[in-house]
Each structure stands twice: as structure tokens, then as C-alpha cells.
Length: 273
Image 1 (cartoon, helix red, strand yellow):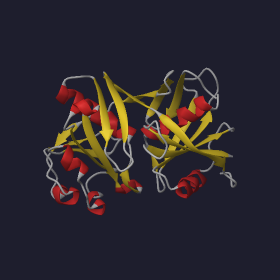
Image 2 (cartoon, helix red, strand yellow):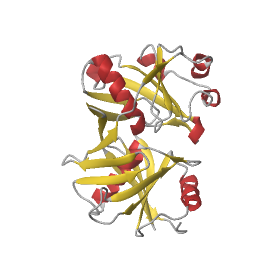
Image 3 (cartoon, rainbow, N blue to C red):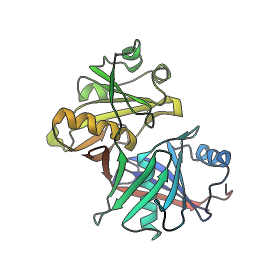
Image 4 (cartoon, rainbow, N blue to C red):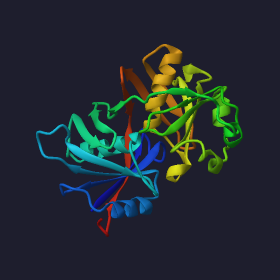
């Protein structure tokens, strides 16, 4: 089977967030255990599996995502990577509809090579600052919000961009505070640099100490910062070591996430699931 590794939310190789992508010729997924085996072997933050659905339905492809240790409800960068592969191989054009655990997701390819994802916006519920989270994160939160069930994170607002960039958290201690992990964020120090806010994401409960660029986190970051900055369209920089930009547009209860992608590996999986 062909397997590809795609760097998502970047226009250059070896940046952004890498995802493995497998497209099945069958009309069903293999056994869950085999999918998890492949994801563990890839050892990337996400491996995406997709197969075509019958024509005339509400979606064109079925899509699932696995970290090295668990299946997740939603994933932005691996959806972008899958859409990139579909368009680059000629398997799809224009808008593609995916049936996933979090609902129907759509992706639309543009002439400049970028792809826009249409995802449900996360709900945001303010909560009291949990005991011990400042020590685990290594910085004092200004505010903390709980995200929707499909995300499963705490969004933690910090004082400034330098604080976000300088975090050296105790990721094992962070695991006690939410089902998936922590989204740390702050306003950009200088919006003239081309982004409005920064973030970093730590997901120890799904086997990812720090995720390079997280599309699903931006379904929470977009409504949070749009409310703060008073604009529906923003650009977020995920300030991980690999780094990546996500353009966000809040549209009611939906968020559009736009970014580029680059295929860096195109190979053969010798032991098919």
C-alpha cells in the first residue's frame, strides 16, 4: 500500500506538522488494532486513514485519525494532509466531504495550493484556574476555559508571547488537568509580523508531549481570539520548534482553517493492515 507523510500548515518541508496518510481501496476500514499498529509504527502525532464512500451520500470519504497510542475524535492537520494527498493524486478535486467521528467535515482546495478546512467551532466555558496547573505549565494563567468534548483540552491564556514561547512544562503533571491536554496561548507581541496570536499545545494523554501545529486547537483559538480582537478572520502562529501558520475565519458555529501542505515521503507499506 502507498503511504505518504505530509507536512501540514506549512509551505516548506520539515516544518509544520507531519501526518501519515493511507488511502484504502476497500469500502471499509481494517481492524482497529491494525490501524493502531500502523500509527504506532509511524510514530507521528497523527496517522490518517480514509476510504471512499458510495456516491450520493452526505460525504465522499470516511476518515479516521490515530495517534501512536489512541484514536482521536478530531484532527485538523491530518485532515489537511489527507485532502492534499487526494488532490495531488487526482483522487479528488474542489471540495471534499469527510465523514468523521466529530461529524461531516469539508475541505476546499484553492489555486494557490492552500486548502481550507470547515470544522465545528469549539464551545468555550470559563472555569476556575485549577490547582497545580501554573506549576505544571511553568507560568501563571490569566484565564482558563474548557473546550468541547471533541477537543478535550483546557485553553490557558498567558501573559504574553514571550511566556508562551518560553514554556518548559512538566507534561506528566499536565496530564491530570484535561482529557487530551493543554492549549497555551497569548496575543502576538507584534501583529505586524503576520500573525495575531501564538499558541503551543501539549497532549500527554494521547501520547504527544508537544504537537507541532494543531488544527483542532484552532477551532477553540479562533472563537477565543476573535472575541478578544473583534475580528472574525485572524492568523495564528503555533510556536513549536517546527512552527506553522493557521489562517482562521469564524463563521457562526463553524471555523474555517486554511493552510498549505507539502508531501515529504511517498513510499510503500509492505505489511498492509
